[in-house]
Structure formats: structure tokens, C-alpha cells
Image 1 (cartoon, protein in one colour):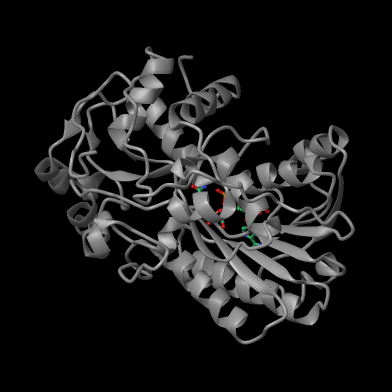
Image 2: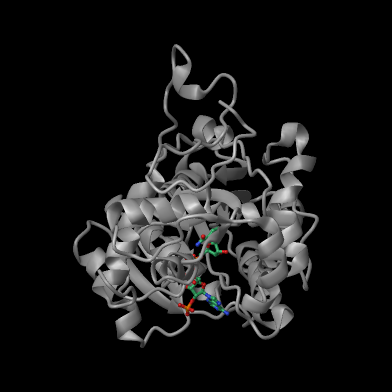
Length: 388
Ligand code: NAP
């Protein structure tokens, strides 16, 4: 494996560099017993942010296991937003109950949490276009996490809390990888480069996860496990999705980068594997700590090649833009492409070690090209991608 290898101007899909695993990966050991979730069907399980992209698949896994899911949503009267969850419940042995809860309303999660042994806290805004990063990202992410964990402190039945964190809490810019031991991100690494003005979404996730560990350390009844996914891709269960994951693929498939893509690498993972990781983090008895959930490193052009392979007529980028050109024009094209962002993310390698989650939780990974193709098909069917 050539860790320093970069991909340039590739249009046809080739197998991507798999995430870096430990030198002795678990599936090569002679005797390996896959950690198996032990479902506790006696008690309900709480999922916050139930309308979300990731949460939908998490709830499907829980309902399929026959569990009773307490689902918190901002508006339980919005039937259209809950239709896919209703269908999941109808088609599965599990049961779903809805509770109204806003992250910013103190005590809002108490009713939903009553009697639950496991809490899965997924709710957090995932968007890059905000007017006020403190109000729109940090306050709900950090305040919401504190609010949910304060409910856990008041709810005696709770024994485990799984917080959906992110690889964004591990690194801010790809350049940060070079500072990680061996140039590879692990669960030991924390994002120290993001701020309110630079990668504010990553800052919100970092501050929220730090708050979670701080509160977990102040008590000893419930145990905290975090799931730290890279960029999540794959089809959604709802008709429309607000997650930023969809914007990235939609914009590329609609020709926004048709003149070329900056050479930016990042981790990618299928939403179904992220959901499975959540269920395992909740019910594998020895689950603990932070868990990087990442399948492959891909550059923007790799995702374009995956789209092209499935849908050759779409106007995806066919070549990499040189860094100097991105540096010149980027800030005029998008406020996300600041000179600092370009300097610290274009032409930098991104590497992460996913071996802890494979070893301790038993996570396995699907290839990303399928996830991307299914996502494009779904957005084509709903008219969000033109020319399919
Ligand atoms: P999403 O579809 O936008 O889901 C976000 C959820 O948070 C929605 O259910 C939303 O509820 C809820 N929410 C936002 N603000 C809220 C508030 N003030 N009160 C109550 N609920 C609120 O995004 P997603 O991709 O599924 O993200 C879910 C989690 O995964 C987030 O914690 C995100 O940071 C994390 N994550 C995502 C990715 C990724 O690539 N997608 C990668 C790593 C980590 P409404 O429906 O009412 O808006």
C-alpha cells in the first residue's frame, strides 16, 4: 500500500484505498469471535433527532431487532417527516413512539428517556451554510449534548449513552493528519484547528464531544461510547433529506464542479455501516471509548468517477484543478473555500485507522461506489439531479 499515493484525473472507477487497519487486522487472526450485540428488548431505547438521515437507518436496525424505540422529533405533528419511520415500524417487529424535544429546551428529553437503558444521541445540525455559527451550530450541538446528558443523569434506568460524534472531532483540516502519530488519525487524536471562524461545523462537533466526555467523567452510572463517522454517503430512508451529505453529491452530479475538482481527500462511509456501528456501540457489551467509523479515503475526483461509472451522462468533474488555481478563484466561488481552507486541505493526504471499531465492535464495511450510485439514483428519482 502506498500511503503517499495521490490520485489524479481518474475517470473510471478503481478500487479505492481502504482505510488503514492495524498491522494485525482482526479478520486475519486465527480465532475471532465477532462481537455480537446483546439486545435488551425489555427496555425502550431512545434515539434523538429521529427524522435525520443517519437516525433513520439506526432506527431501522433497532426496530428490526424488535426493540421499542422512543424517537424524539422537533415536530411530532409533521406527518410527512415521520412517514418513513411509520413504514419502518409497520414492516418490523419493533415499536416506535414519538416524543417532542428540541435540543435547546432544558429538560425536553426527560419524558422520552424515562425507562430507557440505552440512549442514542444523534441530533445535531449538519450543515455548512449558517448565518451565525455560534447560534446555529455550536449552541445546539454543545447545549443539546449537555441537555441530553443532564436527562441521563436524572434517569436511573440509563446505563449507556451513544453520542454521534464525527471524524470532524478528530481532525479539522487534512493537513492535521501530518501531525498525527505516523500521519494517521486515530481515536487518540482531537481536532485542535477548528474554530468559530474556520470549519465551524467541525468545531461544534469537537466541543460537543468534549462536553460529553466531561459529563461522562463526572458520574459513574452510565457509560459513554462515541461513534465518529467520516463523510456518510448512501441512500436516505426519507423522501427528502437535509443532511449536508446530500448537498455534496447533488452539487457534483448537477455540474457545479464540471471544470474540475480541487484535490481534497476525506474519509467516506456507507450510512448503513454507520447505523450498524451505532447499534453495536449501544448493545455490544464491551463497547467503549471513541470509535472511528470510516471505510475508504476518497478525493472529490474519486466520487466523481463513481458517479460517472454509474451515470456517464452527468456533468461531473473530469480533472483535478491545480492548487494555485483553486487558491486564486476559490474564495470568489464559495465562502467555504477560504484561502486558509485551501492551503490546509488541497493536496494533503487523509488517513485514518478504523481498526478499533472493526476489532471491538465487529463493524464491517461496504464499498462506497454502491452508496454513491444509490444516492444519485434516489436524488434523480425525486428530481433533485437533472439529466438522469
Ligand atoms: P440530518 O439528517 O440533518 O439530521 C440532523 C438531525 O438533528 C435532524 O433530525 C434534526 O431535526 C436534528 N436537529 C437539528 N437541530 C435540532 C434541534 N435544535 N433540536 C432537535 N433536533 C435538532 O444530518 P445527519 O447527517 O443525519 O447527521 C446526524 C448526526 O450525524 C449529527 O450528529 C452529525 O453531526 C453526525 N455526522 C454526520 C455525518 C454525515 O456525513 N452525514 C458525518 C459524521 C457525523 P429536524 O429534522 O427537526 O431538523
